[in-house]
Amino acid sequence: MLAIGVGGADAVDVMSGMSWELKFPKLIGVKLTGKLSGWTAPKDVILKVADILTVKGGTGAIVEYFGEGAEAMSCTGKGTICNMGAEIGATTSTFGYDDSMRRYLSATGRQDVVDAADKVASYLTADAEVYANPEKYFDQLIEINLSELEPHINGPFTPDRGTPVSKMKTEAAANGWPLKVEWGLIGSCTNSSYEDMARAASIVRQAVEHGITPKAEFGINPGSEQIRYTIERDGIIADFEKMGTKVFTNACGPCIGQWDREGADKGEKNTIVHSFNRNFSKRADGNPNTHAFVTSPEMVAALAISGRLDFNPLTDSLLNDKGEAVKLNAPFGDELPKRGFDVEDAGFQAPAADGSGVQVAVSETSDRLQLLAPFDAWDGKNYTGAKLLIKAFGKCTTDHISMAGPWLRFRGHLDNISNNMLIGAENAFNGKANSVKNQLTGSYDAVPAVQRAYKAAGIPSIVVGDHNYGEGSSREHAAMEPRFLGVKAVLVKSFARIHETNLKKQGMLALTFANEADYDKIQEDDTINFLDLTEFAPGKPLALEFIHTDGTKRYNISQSYLQRKSNRLVCCWFSTKFNCSWQSVTKINFSFKPRILFEVFLFLEHNI
Image (cartoon, rainbow, N blue to C red; front, side, top):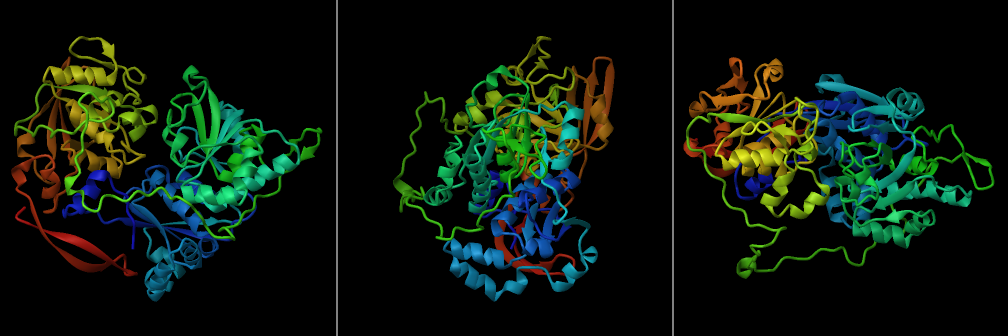
């Protein structure tokens, strides 16, 4: 079984009986030898892999971890690694079924799942010959010796810039990174297991016992009410609070910008460290000058206590209130609570047994909720006279396209949340964010304001982007907002998988350059004509005409709707001319490079 992340539109399609398909992935094997010990944690494994593969190196691939190091790791440690696999673009990440998973499932009240899994255990991990000769079965093989792996601190501004703790002093000095750590943050979905909290608390206890005053603010977000309740029962929260730690809600919190950080509006250059996966510019506190670094929970604790980004707990000491040098011992913590997990109110509210009579009433004056109206269908004609809204330079994540944080209060109101569309993207022509040229007036304005002007004038527009456009959160609004405001196409060097699908399923054209160098030829005052959109079909490149102020240039565009019969379904998201319908489900077996058989469900598509 594999769990593969999708956008909301994909999930809705499958729930309603439509097909979902994926280009057959390649396989990346990560062989883990040795064993984690001391200050090194599971988080360091994925931070190292991200450093090796980069944020797009796992695109179109399943990443499988195996080896003695994998078997010795806790189940929640494996979860941390797989959770962050999205930051390398992986289709999914996986470990073979083992004893750590049995222990975790049993401890969380799922012994029935253990019993069922044990009956087919040999099918829930690779065949022995695969792990014995991995180079024969994986498209790419990475080997990491956990006994030699150092704690890593990745960043700033991207989760794939890895720095071993022993090299941070040199790297920070060379790059001018602020060394003073202002905040340390642990938790959210990424690193909030019982083991994570216990190991971080073991560092905090040492500081308190030795009279060491923390030099940075410190906060934790328990990942669930069950975790919060259990660590409170076991005294772990009390340990944190003795050092002045702020315990936030069981929610995303600062990880998604839900953090009213005092002083962030000043825009001062500063450093924070956290265990969250994503550290893009402005994500945590809205300040573009906040240098956010990703590391393990225990390293977050150590760096927050020391107040220094270049503090190495393996070699450095801290001064206590008596002026004595104290060297922190390596962290420790139970994999699972000895007394089991506990919770009084998990927060689940069951839906009505019969929802047929439930009425959803939304006030027309609400600024937080708005009923959706269908988007206008394509009129079947070529788009002509389109304007270039923005040519985004460099990294353009879904955070750049649709910021979270305070904007999340509008996520139920498409018109209002669209006022954050692309406000974080850097304009390639002036190096500024949220400043683009309005070709109707010649003046510069905010991206949403310019796009609303084009929409009001009935003028189509396109967005141009760089590599891995739309990486990060699978944020539906990043596709809905441009569609709502009248953007017709997004043309990039390459897409992140989920965002590309989200755009297509909102009825937009998600296009890639046939020649990436053409990105550099696009000019700020360009007007764009689609020359053969009326002949749009799977596998057929599109031709766009970019009219410069000094002449005309035509580019061939690869539209990424591949030449497969089933991709007529994809085209249906843009146009109804493909006459799509779906029928029954068929169950088939297939293998990944003759290894384990996986069962998948495919929908047969007829009359398309």
